Amino acid sequence: MADLSDATILSTVKTRPARASVDGIIETSIPFRLDSLRWSGFHTRVVLALGITWILDGLEVTLAGALSGALKESPTLNFTNLDVGFSNSAYLAGAVLGALGFGWLTDRIGRKKLFFITLALYLAATAATALSWSVASYALFRFLTGAGIGGEYTAINSTIQELVPARYRGWTDLVINGSFWIGAAMGAVSAIVLLDPALFGPDLGWRLAYLTGACLGLVVFVMRMWIPESPRWLMIHGHPDRAHAIVDDIERSAIGRVQEQRQHDWPKIRLRMRNHTPLREVARTLFFLYRRRSLVGLTLMVAQAFFYNAIFFTFALVLTDFYGIASNQIGWYILPFAAGNFLGPVLLGRWFDTLGRRTMITFTYGASGLLLALSGYLFAIGVLSAQTQTIAWMVIFFFASPAASAAYLTVSETFPLEVRALAIAVFYAVGTGIGGVAGPALFGALIDTGSRNSVFAGYLLGSGLMVAAAVIAWRYCIAAERRALESVARPLAFVE
Image 1 (cartoon, rainbow, N blue to C red):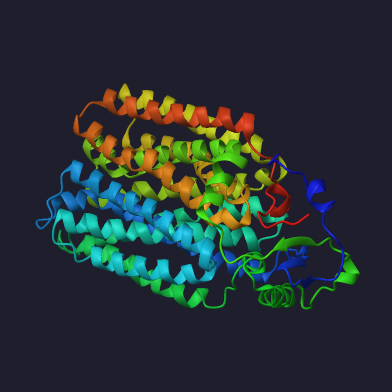
Image 2 (image 1 turned 135 degrees about the vertical axis):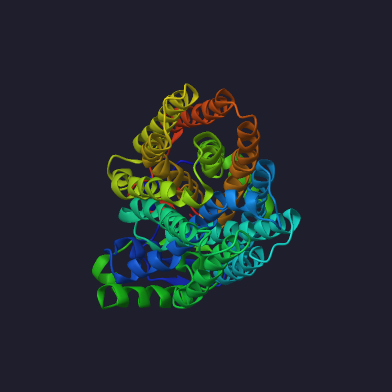
């Protein structure tokens, strides 16, 4: 009932001129106008302005990992490995709650307003982190920083899906999510410089590192000023005139003119305008109407969250505790790791639009899991050096990076527009809550044992989750490549 084809949708729409009726029904060709556009400077600017969110997140996460050694050496904080894992879990817990709260608001008040609310929270919290005076204050500020980033995920992912033409949607989404690793590289370089004891004291360098993120965030405010509200959101929420005006402006920017309906004879979709979607309808959509898609989304999110957060948040601890790498040298190991993570989506991303979602999600999840099991075994028997361990992680995450990004892609394009942001939030929150929050704390405890076999057991758990996700993806993934969002998931406001 829920998995509708393009033909099912298009056979029920009309071709009368766009108009809003007295009973609140609008006929519009906006989705088809947006999908008909070729890539343009407008789309590039959207990618740059919105993709910087993941750069900020990459910077934050990398700093948290790279600074763990410095936090343990700080005379003010004097962290233990457990404190490091707890604080990282606090960041992820904040991201979970932020995604849920702001995701609900994103579907209710729009995408654009949330850009600035969540960014303001991120800026204030990350600057406050630099002023932390205890383990508790540090964890609190990291929690609030995570809440801002979690809110960004929902607004940004939904906006990207609704502005980018269908033929580019998969590759674009993966590359934008992959830009996380540009931030990771920036964090690594910052850590190399700011943790140099010849330049900064042990209690100053890590504070300046967090201020770097706050300064970068200020630039985002300027970049986002010109990004429009999602026309797809506006047309459902009672603002059809604004929606059409924005699409007119996008067409002028992209091709230099407004496209005429009579020249293209686009089909129109009929929608009943609404000011919000009740939570009861959201629950019915996610857990009844689209329950199979919910299973896929939840599985992919849990697997990638545990896999990524458990390993990356304890990246520095493995290098320092098992390989004896100095904390101020961790950044040099993060750089090649970040390069592999960014190259994965860039080089493999287009195949998600050609070979298809099902094939590529299954392949990337399966390859990541099997390679982690192999490298974990080599780690356990002690045949890897710090350099070869980093190379192994670089290869693994070349495949894991597009896999993780595909989880967000899957959730954001396979649910109706009215619940898209909240769907992203719910599955991100549940996935991160189960896989992400527990992962860093678990691995921190495993590393504290000093046993390679204990850490290997954790790697096997992550590997098993990824392989299980690959099996479920092969069986149940939706073929959403190159299809209009409205045909992948019919809007709840759709009128026959």
